Image (cartoon, rainbow, N blue to C red; front, top):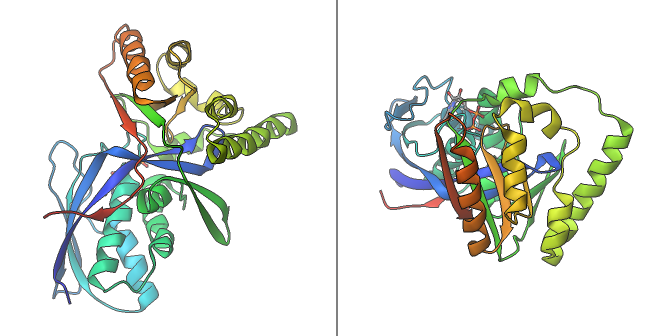
Length: 310
Ligand code: ADP
């Protein structure tokens, strides 16, 4: 059996506009690096390498080891692994930091065990890992992180995941205010009931967004991104959100919304030049706030988690 493997796992945007819990896409950057090695101790051990972005080293508290354990349970085997995580995606930033670890770990172990599962089947184990971070099994970060591109979770029970080709000119600006919003906490504030009038507008947009993506109709994508249910409740957690969104739209973004449960905000554009223009305007706007932030442009990552040089 191969002893060791290194992988890279991309960040991702989940809750794509109107697609709360069902639509997400992988980003070209940033990417986590991980190395997984067999050990003879029948134990899962975690080493958190990046002191800037530490992750729990207790294997019951790290999404990577929890995901691996779910796979080992399914296979009914005992095998120890040492998992070194070089975290590049800040935990709690809203661009799928925990998902990248769960996806990377499960992909690496599947390779070391000589692929007992197909790539799509790995999602179910990565989702178990995600429960540690967010308090529920959601797949809209782990699915695109594993498969690349845009993914639709049509159903959770049973799990039914549909990859969607990303239009070639789709670019994304990410602005990350350096405050932490925990997914689990951002879930707790959500109301359990939805107004029928909002639901009708929302599923109209979901259908419009999918059609726009499939037809590469950027104008339709932009028209369909609005979220009537989650964004109004969560946007108050992000300082100056309304102003930032208005700035992105005025600068030509197709749409702008909360990435995951925030605090990161994403804006979609048609083309790289448009993305840079939107980024410049969003940067100028947010410099007026007294909050440290990162901002960058990324294309959609079509590959997902992959083997990398160690
Ligand atoms: P994000 O959207 O950035 O993944 P979450 O709030 O969903 O943010 O997840 C971050 C939480 O998950 C933190 O409490 C962190 O300690 C925990 N966590 C456990 N294992 C990991 C890991 N390997 N990578 C990132 N976060 C992890």
